[in-house]
Length: 232
Image (cartoon, rainbow, N blue to C red; front, side):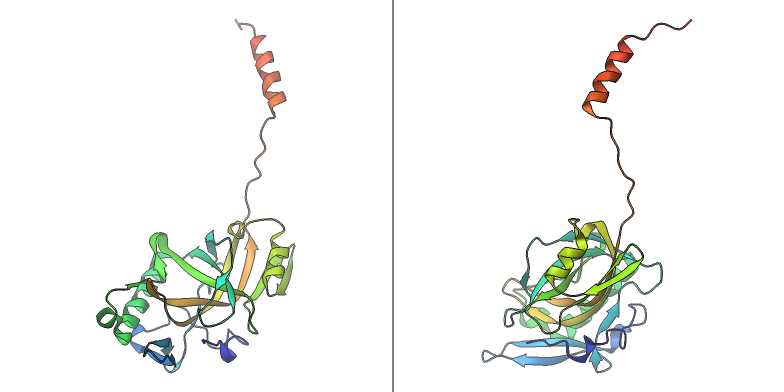
């Protein structure tokens, strides 16, 4: 239904940063028209697919805040399965994503034609952006890269992702995603631009290791404290 085409093969070729993108140049291109007249449209920028680097600087990383427990259908008319997750962007980037949403509303005229449905913005509360890792039943999966003990592990698919997590949660990692604003998804409850991850680098968060006293040590400390004597 919505194919990644050659953008998947080389996500860096067309990737732009959000600050480089001029919202006025956004347009829409119809991908599919169904018998009932409904359409699937993809955002375009100067006639090209919209591919964005959401963490372009060397020290720019996005913190992952939430992850779905199960895979879901990427689109209702195709078999590809994705894992949805949310990451936190800067307030400036969140505002730019809102500008993109607002421009696409005008381009597609949904605010007038489909006012009974909610337009679900790419950015929601807490400057969070929901993205999709394409993992199963697809010829064009998301390229997954994990930094692990000084090495870069590259692969795709759910099994590779699970193996690289080593039992951790995806929220224990930061990420650098390159994404495609793939198309406007018309669900029964809402309308939204699908943010599909083409390639992503994960690096483990560095956390302070928490070490606590055991119950045995607690009890020993209490016995010892009871033997304290006044100091004069």
